[in-house]
Image 1: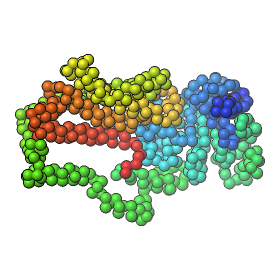
Image 2: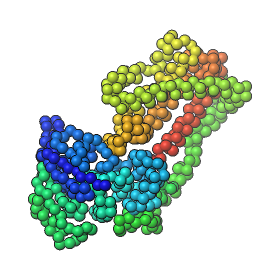
Image 3: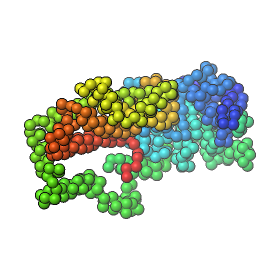
Image 4: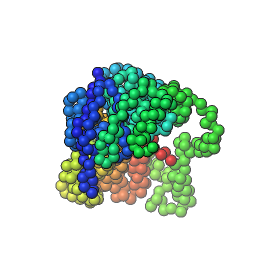
Length: 246
Length: 299
């Protein structure tokens, strides 16, 4: 039940005080159903813009954006999205946040929320309000909420960028397990090289201003991936070279 | 207290989580030592926090002095009767039912006026907050009207609407309209766009977005508007009833003035103060229970 996602000749301009800025230029890539790719690039290269277009939150682009070979026009629950901030509704409890927007009977909502709370390891916090949670826990709730409608694709916009290193790795592992179990199509936007290698089957490398695909790197490592391994280090080196950092 | 222990709990959870997800556990002991001074301070100030009626110390002292000065003969009893006299008058007015019926008449005017003006303020404020077209069409006019002191409209309302209930209700409604209009408008415009996006992702319809995202997010400001509107409406009520009423607290007040019964004037002022305060406490309680999800500075 996963879907393919693809971009063809995607371009996006932004109006600024000094004139028009070409943010992205001729970006094309394809993600097969159930695949996970990472989108890496320096800040300001338009990674998030791509994701917002796939989510259906932005339509001021030229080119094509397709989900399952059908043009994306508006948001759809089949494409879940996770932002850098948890974006929880502060007036709703953890339970209510997770089942927000599910058009299902109350019992079914509760059952699903309960299952997801277990999945992200937040048992005991069902009735807590977001301000009572730490950053890592709030992001776990956001993951659960994004998974609640059983999305066929999950779009991740630097989801762990604001967390400390330990929490980040823990959540990356949790996400890896969820993906292995559910096999939804994933696009992970990140500027964390290790995160890209740990999760992506392929890494799409973007250049800055205008953003363009400079290279697509296949990560040929079995899951679950061992961050300490020789080959992990090899890919890390490759990516650092690609970014002129080595 | 429940809230405090939850917060404490989550700090520990993040610390003890070594794999994907650990169950919450509490190790309160390790945290006690460094927090000792903080706890001491909170214990010292507990009498302040647990709602000991320290706010009444000053008014009671003033009344005691006033009584003493009256008995000692320092004050002309025709200009400022003793507290005991005022109390006796008040009891008398309660006994013969005057105060009850006046209070009822005033309360009705207040509530009806507030409901009409407040509802309109909420509706127009929402409309202007939600639609930029409505903002451009309406906001300038409303802001212009707002600068007119509503008291200045009183003579006009009497000329247009007569001396009966309509001008009074209108005046009270006008007074309640603006606080709710302004706060609803500002509250809606302050809603985090990122939360609206979540609503879009869930494909909420316009009314759903309003009811489930925008209004809850704007609720703190709207409730501030409600409190302020009730207070201003209370002021408008006095003026409206001084314009000429057959019943009500304002009527009692003007009657007291006409017959030079300072004790009656003081009694009605006292009732104004008590009812105003009671309603404020009520709305504040409502605020606390509706907004317990907020994490704000509590002083």
